[in-house]
Amino acid sequence: MPGRRGLAAILTVAIILVIVILPVLLIAASLVQESADIYSKLKAGDLDPLMYFQPIFRSLPSWMIDFLDSFGLTDIATVKARLGTALVDGVQVIASQALAIGQNTFAFVVGLGVAIYLLFFLLRDGESLFRRIELTIPLNADLQKSLFTKFALVIRATVRGDFLVAILQGALGGLIFWLLGIHAVLLWATLMAFLSLLPAIGAALVWLPVAFYFLSTGAMWEGIVLIAYGLFVIGLVDNFLRPILVGQSTKMPDYVVLISTLGGIETFGIQGFIMGPVIAAMFLAVWDVFSATRQKTLLPT
Image (cartoon, rainbow, N blue to C red):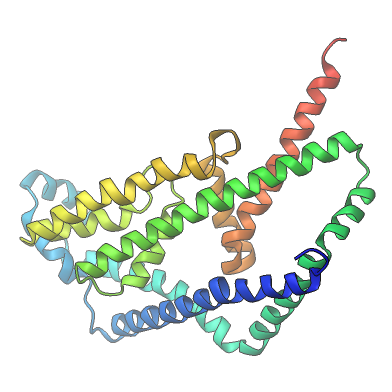
């Protein structure tokens, strides 16, 4: 829409609302409901996590039972206490974030409105604002260009590669869980999406124990299907899509993504899932550009 930057910005914001913000809010509401239900059942004693682990214990070989016994993991009361505490703490983290939003609904709505309002002006006047920033930064033109180019590449690689792959792995994991009739699908899908940021293992920390549970309880077909799906669908998404979406030259190391994501969530709350890696990408961009510039200045002429 040449010459209609205001209208183009309004339509862009409307598209973002429809395909991004509204679906995220709906998913978040459903996730909150599932987390609250599980937490209330755990607290009331209606849900016993140990019930799902007893068949696994019974199917273990004797040497494995002896090994677990050395850590006190075969004592039913001890395992129940540890497992119950871990599950309650994990669900409570999600529930507490949701409760904070619910208790501060007005602040949340105002903050979202300000963000959308600001987004409109950044889309409409972003080019002129960027030119002002260029004039303000006390760096020469070549260094500015290298810095902005590198920053844009790393940000796009991080968002497209790490986050899209994580969301896709979580969605695929949630799909197979739903088809197999596993409860709290959205909660497990969200957990798999977060764990996908872990290098190598990632979402397998969720679906692999479930597959072992199926096998140990005699549900051989479900266990085999889940293992095959996890290895050849969920697991290979990272190997096939990440190089296409990212490219090896701009990929942030997996450990940087993991640490920056956890640090971002701890510092900024749930929005730190995005802000943490973005700040890390900015740091890496500045580091690379200035390191390359310094090496050039130190080379003999």
